[in-house]
Image 1 (cartoon, protein in one colour):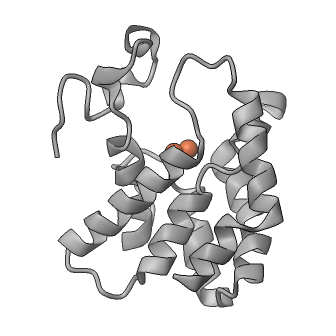
Image 2 (cartoon, helix red, strand yellow):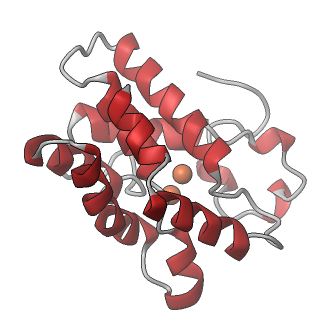
Length: 164
Ligand SMILES: [Fe+2]
Ligand SMILES: [Fe+2]
């Protein structure tokens, strides 16, 4: 997981996480901090393992998940979709960490698609599908004090309990 280590210590990565945390200091709904990214990374790996996918490496699954929300802070200031901004910001970090052009393209595409409806009529890689599902399953809505005010609540899997 050497390349994952290069991502999480990358100066831009640390800067974007700092920006997310600063922008979400007063946020009552779920945040986009390192804990969320790591939870999504672990779930993405588990989902790929569960479906017997051995083509997507653990490093690629972790890279996609650890980077999927790094542009969230931009959505607060400029209303840009954070799936798009995160995809754009992820590119140079993936290159610096040593991912090939082909690997980076697959990872960036999964990041760009991570907010689309699970049933959206688009081509999706197994990595994209797993990341999308992991992102939703990472949110424990039944433990959230702001759940009754959240407009995503009805779309989330864990409204009342843990269901997988
Ligand atoms: Fe997101
Ligand atoms: Fe997320």
